[in-house]
Image 1 (tube, rainbow, N blue to C red):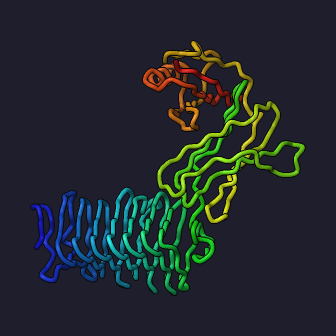
Image 2 (image 1 turned 90 degrees about the vertical axis):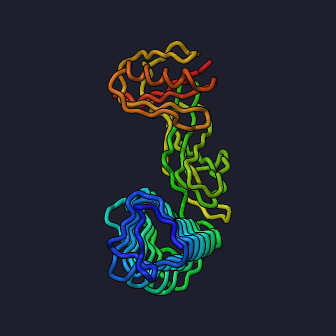
Image 3 (image 1 turned 180 degrees about the horizontal axis):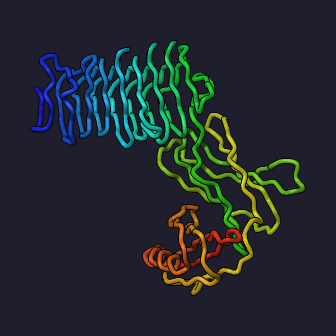
Length: 364
């Protein structure tokens, strides 16, 4: 039995969808096993649920959301495209024996979740790129003759582990071994930014991650001009596995000399990677000031116009970030934010024609 609205297409008598069956922005639900017929195209622009297994022998294009409660099987003749912002949720196993087609650089910026195993079969070819994510509850299995390309920050997480049966897996063009390099930590932590904020009486490292996999935490490493190498001065705990933005901060000793810092990101299994290097002593001469400080919200800027600004709370989160043309715009936007913000300390980073200036702000 099928539950359809007027805009939901009817498959043929064998429950096969054809190229006349485009789902145009509606919510449609189908009961039983269904398929996309060979040489035919089925495009999903709305929300579709298949309460059963779904097999693709032709072409399936997802611009909206598809939920398959059973297994999803892509035949060797099948093609699947998950476009920007779309999602695919498979309740059981996902067996890919065909192709994922990417028609634009940021295609597959949505997400794919698999309740069982993901098997990239002998003729299976797949690419995850941009903000695309493949989240697998079971195992990821790469059979001989298959390829999986992970590019430009794409994410693959398999909670049940990784099985290399001879398939090819590349990360940003470099081949990786599922049984070693991806076991427990398939992809490195993806940093959004890592910066050093400096004021006259305080210096702070702030960073943000877009995704984390088995991340135990970050060693804070420091190197002065007289040192031969970096050495560890502290540690900040990570957030394990996460696909949401996470912000971090670490207060460092105030120094007006050039000191270099980096992060050593450590996995629970002992694997690690290094961040980029930032350094102190790079701020501009501080001719800028903000008043009143402390403030109840309204602030004014002395020193002239700036190119851009960022406002951070003490957890290291950038709560406001804009490119501005004049000081009046900055005053308006920062004041508007602070008036409704929690009391506490903030750091205002100003990007000026002569460099960066950071000012400590106190909201009463």
